[in-house]
Length: 227
Image (cartoon, rainbow, N blue to C red; front, side, top):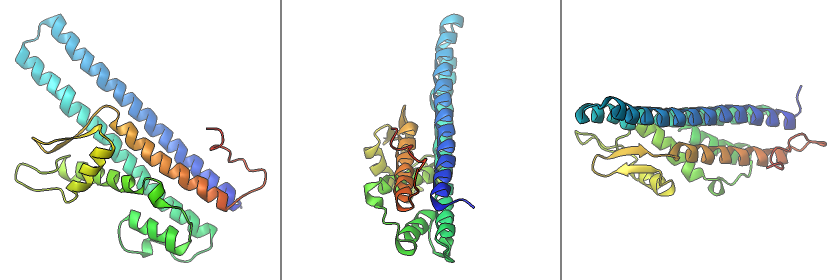
């Protein structure tokens, strides 16, 4: 059976692998967007495409195509993040031999996680110093993407419930833009990578803190010291 330190470090490695894959995916999508944009500009010059036809095609690439690819990154990011909260709580339950499960408590996985690490296992991890507010806001960004098609308010006046949360996120990460005329959220260049960095930093710090609480002599978990 693995000792506690090794199990924690193993979970960190699994999480890091998933995040590295997401960063590669994000990088590849950025390259696809760039290539497609250049392709349409080249086509217009080469084939003298009429302006109206070009504008329609370019709108697809510069708006619909780009938006769908970038929102897919945010959805994937939050899926990984929420799963990791579940994994972390289950790991701590086993390590500490606790009968209480995190999903015993009501609320979202974020609320369950917060209660579990603070009140059940007393992890003493300071959420407020580790971008907890931004983590919550990124999840609400995903919610707006999935349930409101990236609109803070639609054509019929249906408003997203957490508009101010999205506005706060836009101020913290300026590449997440709110088009005030259309009430649409625009994920500009770099927005996805900034969100990825916030989430990865949170979990890196969480695992680093937890590894220190469960030390092991001749530890192999020097991943943080090598940065």
